[in-house]
Length: 414
Image (tube, rainbow, N blue to C red; front, side):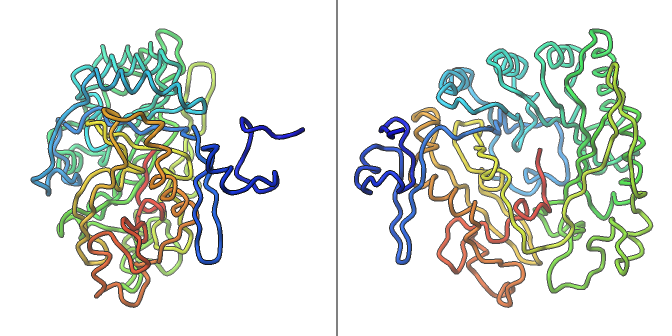
């Protein structure tokens, strides 16, 4: 069949000239020393991470807001949200919207209205929550709206550990809210939302990890999602468990109880295999613990870019990922790192479609998919290089994803 402009792609098989491909508006051309790259433009967005608010009702010790006085709180204006929602039809492959970010989604003054509008529009919605605001009314809305998954952050299985980490919260209250959600589901014979427990792994709560499957079984959660800590202070860096290249392997992948690893960590290992029954109405799922990578490796993959996702902050700013959505400090490999927000536009003044197809954004996604970044963590100059301190690298990338913990699978998000 003869190709027309409507179905023209970015290959050269159609014998079209580069100029014609550019003029058609379907491709962005990069001419380099040894290659010519044609980047396909279009409506490829499949997932949105939406931050309804940056506010939170807890003061968790792991959170950047405890160590960063410049952090500003705010919530997305409903007029801005409605503008975004009306323009999402430009992305026919968009199916999933996850409510999360740096704040507590349910702290938004009209959180339940936001959720209803998203699900009424046909999107598969999930959200992160600290669980304290999942009141009976909120639970009913989550069920009636058809929310797909609710991720409850629980970093301790006893009250003492929980209170030290998630300051301002009570474990018994959160567990009661989860149980009430599950009870309401049974009453109306609903299968969703599924409940997933999230656990930030640290030295001070390592002994709690083996207890998570028992809690998950009690609340009917089929998954425990474990992530490592992103340390925003020296105190929190001392809590880090993942293995750092060049350092003594004090703990490293010990929670997986590999031979030779630290015996203190091995004492807190999960039984192998760890499974439990999670009952959902008329069927049973086998629960499992999903561990993060515990060491720096050569394999790097950005789940945000590779899954065709974008992040939208409460103020309408668009970023490629969680790691670049704000400016903040954190410690990595015993050195301080200052991340600068990488924002491609704002949905208040531009359409998300136009932002998604900006040349800068298209080229950035290409670099990340091919991971054209050095590996800073195992570089011999990592201790003295000042590029990485400002989130740049010696290959000229700014921002740089060279030492991103998300791409390593060390830090994980839904």
